[in-house]
Image (cartoon, rainbow, N blue to C red; front, side, top):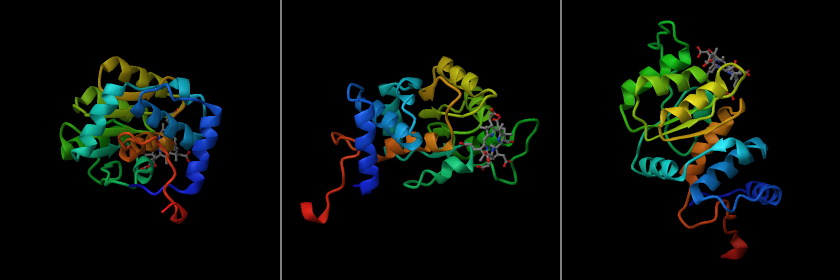
Length: 203
Ligand SMILES: C/C1=C2N=C(/C=C3N=C(/C(C)=C4\N[C@@](C)([C@@H]5N=C1[C@](C)(CCC(=O)O)[C@H]5CC(=O)O)[C@@](C)(CC(=O)O)[C@@H]4CCC(=O)O)[C@@](C)(CC(=O)O)[C@@H]\3CCC(=O)O)C(C)(C)[C@@H]/2CCC(=O)O
């Protein structure tokens, strides 16, 4: 069981006093709350596009040991509970006219094959590559940020029919994408997300 710092538990109390997501299904709620927690941005309550069945498929894959792949090292740095593959820094990543982020996707797929959970928090071109390269993902968390191509790449992800979490606006980012993945890694069946850890006084 994960130890929850009192500051994190307090953050959750504040979040829930500002926005009530109790009507959402459990995994959708856990992901949405954790994204809001990481960004202090309540607009994600309506901006995020998640599907409970897709999240359930992603959770099952993670629990079965599916590899986790990220577009950039910043997203990887935010995922501490499991090893992560990120190929952007591999010397063998040749650009071939692609961005390094997109080339890294091809390199990562060569390492993982199908069935991985892909997490994109920075590069729209990486998300486009995931859609077009045919990586057969268990889940794509597609939350790149920016004014050039971010919203469009997320719309393309939704149109692709791949199992996905995305958001509609230009917002996103490495911290937010890592948070969405962490929500799945931390999820406990039947436990309200962010229940404070028992203290010594409780035991
Ligand atoms: C267009 C790019 C954008 N990058 C943004 C924001 C941030 N990027 C940071 C860093 C350190 C990196 N960005 C690269 C991924 C680099 N960024 C790009 C590219 C030029 C193209 C990506 C795309 O359009 O799909 C991309 C270069 C590439 O060849 O892929 C990075 C690889 C650059 C590099 O160092 O070579 C590098 C990531 C390294 C790593 O993690 O391994 C920032 C930290 C820069 C900063 O603000 O100081 C920041 C991180 C934001 C975050 O939350 O992740 C944008 C604004 C997202 C922008 C994409 C869209 C746009 O509107 O321009």
